[in-house]
Image (cartoon, rainbow, N blue to C red; front, side):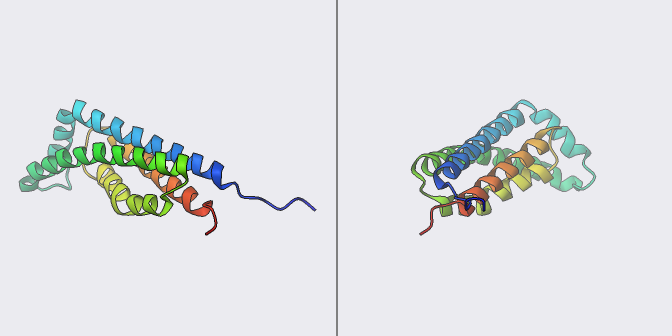
Length: 143
């Protein structure tokens, strides 16, 4: 009979921390990339058929505001990466931040018209955050 599978919560927390750090890097990359390609984003918004003419300026303002959110989330994810990855603390906090802040921000980054490539970075960000939350909650230490 094979030996029973033992969960290694310490290794899982290190993986979770690494995924959080990766998501933070992706958030910074998206924020910087947006700043560098803002004109292309403005053009994409002007040519987007799903955005009506009176709303185009508001969508661009929303993109500008959300860009600050990408940088703020990056800082928050670095803190969570340290807490979860090194101290094995804050898995539920990570889950809450991922569900209430990171995923909606990523979906907005994916669905709003933007320069080419920014949507792929947003999807990769969502994937990292969801994977980090899943690993943290599924392999956490038993209470």
